[in-house]
Image 1 (cartoon, one colour):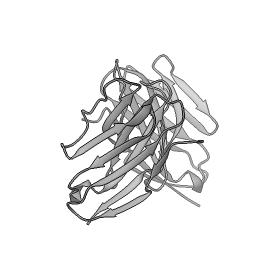
Image 2 (cartoon, rainbow over the protein chains, first blue to last red):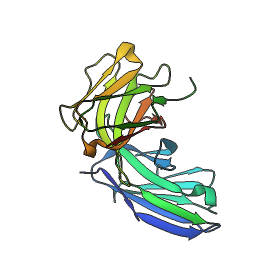
Image 3 (cartoon, each protein chain N blue to C red):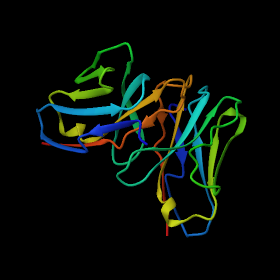
Image 4 (cartoon, rainbow over the protein chains, first blue to last red):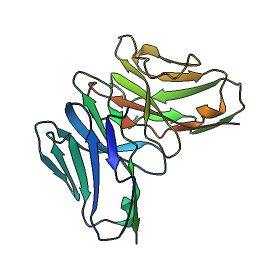
Length: 111
Length: 114
């Protein structure tokens, strides 16, 4: 079963609005990562948050982690049409060396 | 090279034929992963290589799938007797240290089995 599951599956917003995507996972993790994928090709790493961190920022991205709820959120502020992509969370639990990915959130930002 | 490269970028084959997909990881990266992604789905783990250790093949869906990594660098994923359900994008990623580290992905190979 998937370690991480993103929610919502699809999100459609207007340029300038904020986009929030959530990720839930099942077992304790060492860290959680968010990736972006354009057009079904390679994934690009966005941000990594460790299990002892609660919030992390990178440019217009803000990631939070709530280990008590086993969930994370990715916020993209002031979205742009170029942010249109699929966003995935990935996490590895315990001593596993294999991060597992959710099915992703498909974000469409309308200009 | 600057990043992970994969070849070919697209492959169309007939059912029953064998295919080989290649991945060149970032130089010096010890860990290499293969994933499969079907249309609109997440990434399905296939196989993991770490240094000279025995690979973790737990994600390979059938014995038609195999992979090797020569000299700790280039990896080849081989699918024998391809089936239509093998159609997907095959992604390769490498990391510098292994578990939980940032994965650097190649652009993928889109495989279509007719």
